[in-house]
Length: 492
Ligand SMILES: [Zn+2]
Image (tube, rainbow, N blue to C red; front, side, top):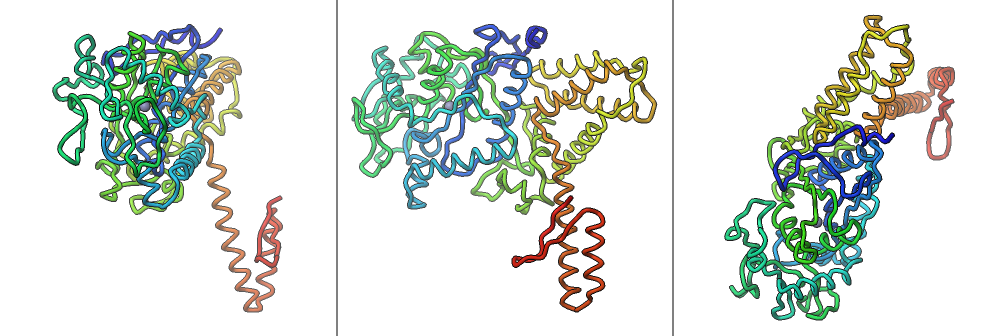
């Protein structure tokens, strides 16, 4: 029997602001859409936190035996500065500054994004659609909104009539904004906006002469509004009503509010059953911002190449650190906090490495099935990873007690125990045991030092010492090889 049948998930729905029992539209299947990155710069750590949480949710659904279609888009057009309806396209701006094609910007930062996610052991989504790959569908949706009387064209641009929509719907239902306050930032050069109401948002923008990223449409050569792509791509791949839509908290308004308005206009019903939003990631108690320098890239953590870090940390330590906090809480990133997480992570890996070799007895003094249920209960309770981790550390305590003969376990229980520990640590949390890799890094360092000392000895004609270094390394299985490029080593 699939595990999901015996695990009732509860999900905090940002729309109802309560934890609700999760019931998918189609039994045994989950459709999940997460707003992906706008690929105009390197993926930043705050984004990684959001995607990492949804990676763990995805992993847990798979572990429970659901068939999941996970769609995470790439925004490669239409996202203007400051999330507003005016201003320059973020990608076009970067292209102009770097003097390259917009699609070169898209390519560069899409590759970077995938590269980072791979290093952090993410599972790829089922579909990763792009905005530019769905221009035709976006134009169709605009036509439909115009037909329903909620879109209007002015000077080649098309806007969504928020005030008219709000007569029969609740604009602000997700973000809690009142319609009077839900004004979309509009930077107008001449003090005049095309829009009927300041609350309205763009569905299609006429491209200015300088604007490179443009497509033909019935209204003008232009480009789609940022909010449209997610309504189009989620309904195309998941249907007009699907299970889960996720993203960072900052996307609730305007982005997700606009998505609801567009989709409801076309289908007549709510597009999403469970809205999920992750909270912010701070750096040393402050909001991360490139402009203030309070900023760190995911890659810099792996190399230690940032002044806020005391050293480099592995991707699994960062993952572990993220999962020690609830996704709905603000998380404060710092070097000290990572060091604390590293200690916990190493303790966990150390215990897991001895799990398979534990000796078994005729009876168990530990209630393994109760412990296992607690692990599932934590994840079933809105993906409460910090509580799950506390139960995994209870598991570490069991391992140590068994090793010290202070507790006993039967062979049957050990199988359940080991399977559950491994499933949660590696499959669900997505941690890797990179402790071995770390120790091989250390060996690299030590051998490099010995190679350097041997080279110095040879330069000083201290042949006895240089031979001693070579022979003693060989005796422990490390063979030095002198070549034109210097000395390398291999291990037997
Ligand atoms: Zn989106």
